[in-house]
Length: 273
Ligand SMILES: NC(=O)C1=CN([C@@H]2O[C@H](COP(=O)(O)OP(=O)(O)OC[C@H]3O[C@@H](n4cnc5c(N)ncnc54)[C@H](O)[C@@H]3O)[C@@H](O)[C@H]2O)C=CC1
Ligand SMILES: O=C(O)[C@@H]1CCC=N1
Image (tube, rainbow, N blue to C red; front, side):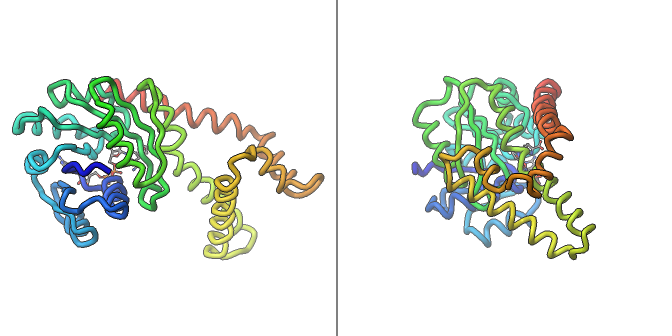
């Protein structure tokens, strides 16, 4: 992987995930710096990964060839305004992981047509099991695309979308979706407790079933998901009763509505921010 000087502005959950993956992939710790207003997260990153840290975004900017914009979307505008006021941004590559902020809006916030790659990662990146969707326009060179792809591949799988709208689909299918599975598991855990199991037993059963199911999906890329389901579903048996209840109660429609709600919110954020 190319070893650019890489700065993370905002040292929260997502930055920590990506930094962890990069270090494990052999990215030189001297080439990574994280900036955050408060020190506890920075101290932890320094201790755990040996990277450089600073409370000054300007220092981060001066250090870096490439800058990950990893603050919440609502504070991106002010943060970028300070960055462009105090620094020469020419020649820098920007990687934005913020939901709902289009490249054109980010360029406006940065005050110039700087190359910006939009990345939509997810929290399993922390375990190297992430999924990131990416978009770049023609201001980003092929070499920089490859660099960003390598960075995000260090924490999981990547897909590129040709049109920026595709990023909102990535949010619905991968960025937000770990939460859908957690909700599903939470409800299953609660129902197992209603059936008399204690909390830990309930969690163990549902998490192990999910882990096993996910690994079966990954290990059988040639089998349709419906076929994997069929393998569990004995004719006239228990699974059929449960699955048919999901289907009859409109699970497909609920999933469709929920994913569309995520897309709609991303579109709304793009207008508001
Ligand atoms: N959490 C998730 O599942 C995902 C989050 N994202 C995006 O990632 C971005 C970061 O999210 P998280 O890491 O979850 O948030 P977080 O809240 O854990 O981290 C944000 C960090 O930015 C710091 N910060 C606040 N103001 C700052 C400033 N002016 N300069 C520098 N740092 C500042 C905060 O102290 C905090 O440590 C957001 O834009 C979010 O939309 C994208 C995909 C998935
Ligand atoms: O909920 C959010 O807005 C962010 C983006 C995807 C996951 N978390």
